[in-house]
Image (tube, rainbow, N blue to C red):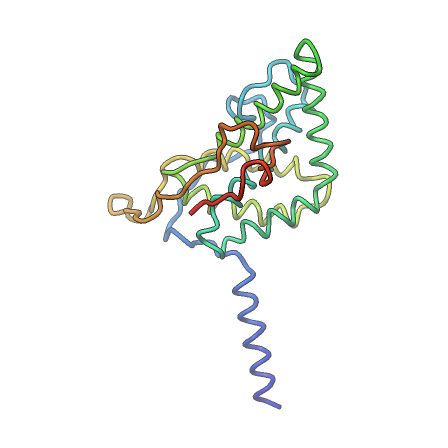
Amino acid sequence: MFASRIALMLAGGIGLFVSAPASAQFFLKPANLESGRVNGSEPGMTGPALPGATPVELQAALAWNLRAALNVAALQCQFEPTLLSVDNYNSLIKDHAIELRDSYATLEKYFARTYKNKKQGQLELDKYGTRIYSGFSTVQGQLSFCQTAAAIGHDAVFVKPGKFSELAQERIKELRASLGPWGEQYRPSGYVVTGMYGVKLPPFGNDKCWKKGQYQVKKCGPLLLN
């Protein structure tokens, strides 16, 4: 009986270690990234600028940017399974489906009123979505981006429905800062990364491969990143 209890305790402990995202997969001391709440009017926070956008439209854009960034992380960060990038992304897409749908609808209305007709507005919205994705692709900052995105993705799973855009306001600045060439801060001069930069990126420049910010497997084939 005692042995079986020990086995159950060990199994439970292993499960905790497997499921919980680690805080330091890559660095002894990660970079202290710039953070702080934004409203979307700050340069670069919504990706391409959105002239004349209302506060509600800017908030929707931030939510869509965060969703896109975590989607990129799910594609680009699979080399480290303990980040749980794919699992967390799949969970947040389900949990925040209504808010994300509404955010996209808000962006549709912005582009429809900004451009001369609905067709042109949709074309520009598609371009905007593609540019958002390409803006989160990184090579030199891959480790810091993946680690930061994993932490935010983990938080997104536990955010109440309807609050995803608020999470975006709080964390998008930090996530964009992570795209820079950050390395080990404990011994910065001795930081060397090898074997990481042969990762292939998704075809961000090919518009036919994307629809509403989602990669289209049927049109462009499986996305092979390694």
